[in-house]
Amino acid sequence: MFSNIKNQIKELAKNAVFVAEKELGSGKGQQKKTLAIKYIVDHLPFSNLIKNIISILLSSFIDDVVEIAVTYMKSFKSSEGE
Image (cartoon, rainbow, N blue to C red):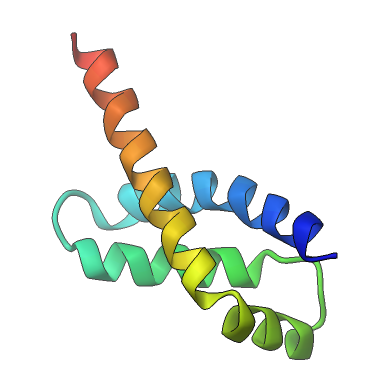
């Protein structure tokens, strides 16, 4: 079960980082990270109670996935700029 949820979180993280970047622009890293995490949790296909439990149990994983998505986005932007 957690494997499927983790895959959903990974997919949501990509969108979350792009949405946060678009909404807040450059800089404001901590605000963007908070917004990305909120986006992920809000878009999970579960009741609010389950979302809260998932966000607590997988908080570390969600943080890591957001960081990976940020790195991916930065590498994507730099390859576009070249």
